[in-house]
Image (cartoon, rainbow, N blue to C red; front, top):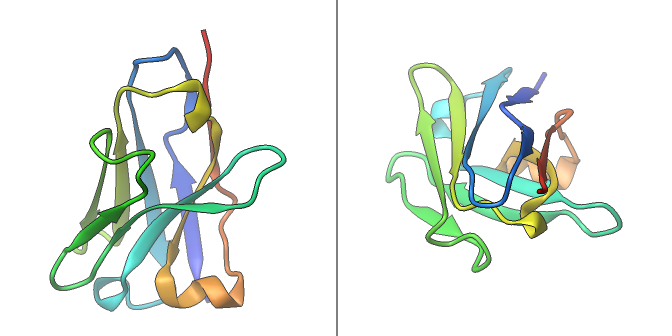
Length: 117
């Protein structure tokens, strides 16, 4: 059973940084392409960043490119999202998920990020 536990969210001011973590279990993390999504109130869930297994190739949404960095620790089954220069429009619940699980709607509880002065 896929288990995804996101953590690291919080309330920060514009321009500050946060590091999100996602502890994964119940599937082969090492061989899974992984992604971070976010959902703001009243909006659709959107893809923020992805990282491929093996190659480690990264892709980012245009809105976060240059500010966010996705990384993974395959030895610890953990996915990370380093967020810098945070903006109020980054406010959302952030979710991690293996790419193959998106169509099965197997989301975790997410972690809330609020950027406000």
